[in-house]
Image (cartoon, rainbow, N blue to C red; front, side, top):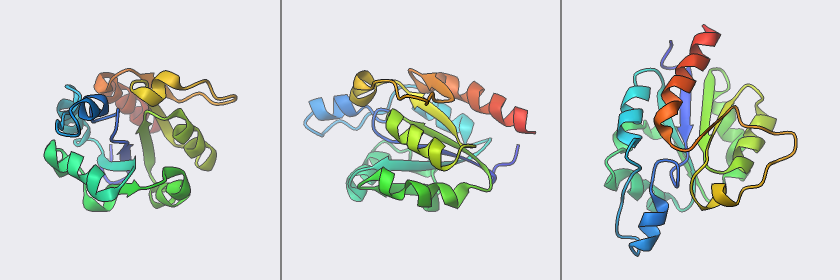
Length: 164
């Protein structure tokens, strides 16, 4: 497996970061889901890791720093924007020559990504306020659905092995 030709892009909120707990703590508790460190460590051995998240840059970056996971992501692979849909095409085109995995709790983002780049592998993390309210999207089904990140290692390795 080639490290530089594979990128795994993670959303932050509800995917890596326990946003509900953060909100309940009056924005004081910076906590990851329990499986995140192990998964990032393991995935960093087989791919480059990146962030594709929505929100205010400094605020979102602080979540990476305070939880000590910023070290897993190269700065060039950290994409934080006020509106992900507006920059989706530009971000995906940066990585289009390799294998791209997009991991997000918003089914709408995964759907748009698949329209732009059909070869992208989409993983829907079905947890958090958006996932709970999400209705099916006609003619779209993510490549994988998980309720936490524990299973994505196997999903990604199996997908990469098919390509090799």
